[in-house]
Length: 233
Length: 233
DNA sequence: TCAAAAGTGTTGACTCTACACCCATGC
DNA sequence: GCATGGGTGTAGAGTCAACACTTTTGA
Image (cartoon, protein in one colour):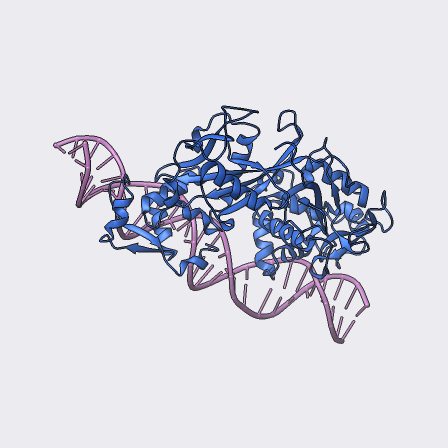
């Protein structure tokens, strides 16, 4: 068995972001064949001495200059269709990351380390066009996973900043579950879960930093204790 | 990139079974190095012209003579630790299957096609010892996934036969979620979900076929209409 | 001043949990 | 006849969904 031909192994990562209103995904414009010029998920080939997790983080840094930690990415699954890569046998292990709001604005256009990626940019998840390879399928699976994890894992919440308004939280939920949620019921439920605490408005810092946010309104943050209790609610 | 060394790619499959009382997992005794003589999940190396799904099904057939369909297995994820295989770089794409009760008894001891596996046998999931490679970890992840899918996917139900008693269904649930469930509440909930219909006891066929089942009791089956409505309950 | 978004409670339906005894069967 | 497992109902608590108007703010 050992001498048999092997498929190449790559990783791809679906990086989700949130601008306060819409759920976004970070894509790169490919700088080489195949699919040169097309938009694709950041990713690349795995090296012998690294895990798939490490590979994702490395490629993310190379192509988008984002530096994430292992606990910030979650595996979605392996994509192994025989012809998913034109002319070559490549399987891909897909990941997703819910990017902390603070890092959202750090993505700049331009070339990021090498010519794999010409540039990186954010797209509304609802308006993503045809991507390279099977990346549309991967994106769908990642969104599905993000939705599944919404009620059991805290990581989706990092899409918000350190503090946020109730309507931002509301928009985020609606964007992820893909349907409208009653505003009153939503805030009632959130508040009664004791995960949030109100942030005094004199912390204008945040308000100012967060530039083009919605009009105004009370701001919240996740309470310290909630870190663990967010496990299951 | 194309000339770079590549890890070997394998698949492993956690096959769950149910004997009416306990949740079981199908293991094989390895017939070759490494880990010769140890118990392991059935699996093997992926070929260039097949998907990981197909690879799992093929290996399952070769090592345990089980013939499953693609829709009967679900991917758990890729395991890519650098030293998960001694001396060689192998990543594994793991699957799980919830085996239909009818097929549960078909597993016989003995050699099954080739010397990869000396024999195959069922083990109580709670009593599995130390397995080859990182297969204990894979098993845990698969159990986790099975649990997650219990309330959203119908496939766990195939662990039961075409017909079953309420207490078998109850035992299966307890085995999967890993905690006790109130008997009365459980059957009430099940019955009110309209997924089940009672099977007339004159269908003694089933009762007889199902040999060493519990004492007796009403038998149920899933109603035809429930096939789709089982999606979300 | 007008338009857009923020903030706020109540009710009814439903769902979940906790809890105990009698009956039939097989040994 | 005894032990094991099968079968069944109710009450209370909690949770969820539906529903509209007033206030503030920014243009």
